[in-house]
Length: 102
Image (cartoon, rainbow, N blue to C red; front, side, top):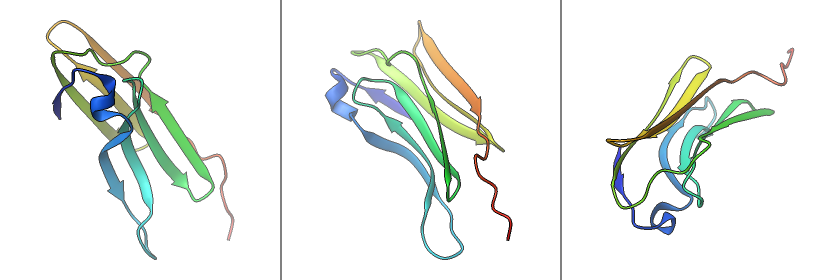
């Protein structure tokens, strides 16, 4: 996704990618957000009782075109941005904090 922002308010707290899955109704288990400070974040519900996140450490630049991407490969989540002169990308393997035995 390409964005051009002149202030972080332009896209503050916007969900930019979202994927839902549930056997019994819609449950948001993966979404990527542009935070109010210009950093990016992925949040995923691994189980009903376990949520994990990964963040970029620096905000995307203003007043230039920025390419934003978020992706998942099994439990490895990556989010980042890239311009012609700079980039930021963070990855994290999410883990289950709770396993339910039925």
